[in-house]
Length: 224
Image (tube, rainbow, N blue to C red; front, side, top):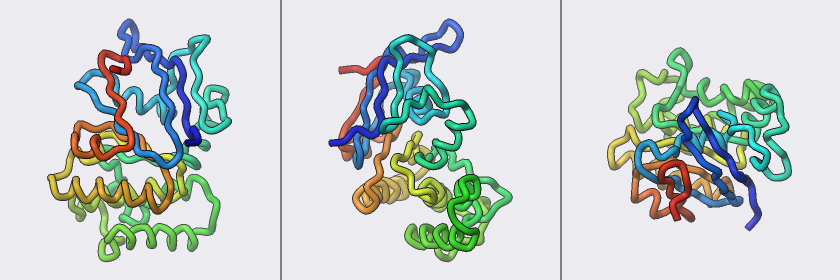
């Protein structure tokens, strides 16, 4: 398997509190990885570091590569552009913008990385929403959507720039059992159909057991 994302000796302190301690992780192309562990183990912090939403501590042996790109070498503006073009994000609380419709929310990452015309972008966003069963809800704002529908919009938004990897933080934590199962099924369909990788922080044991690999964190370290 080809390595997509490689982290070596990454740590994170907040003041005197050490949250992560010299973590080594590889994520491969076209795999789903679940990160599990007790509350406070550092799962979300690790996800934020791997996805470049936060930077690890500056240490001599610390490395974070995406394919051949050393992410530590990128300035904040370069990193933001790189992240938008190569990564997708799904959060527990969907983080949709309330003043925009479902279609507009899906388009937002594409507006920030203009690779195509507005018409082409909207057509792609519409196709994604139709694929996710949202064809009757494209012009609804988030307040008019159910929790499951909001998460499907968030998934479409994560896919709009054709990312190589999607990071998800407790994506089904706010959903009932049925909608959670539908969302999990969707992840595996997308893996097969689009070949994208997923790194998922989850407390859902069913989702973790279906993953290609489980990484267990305990006290800021990988628990082997």
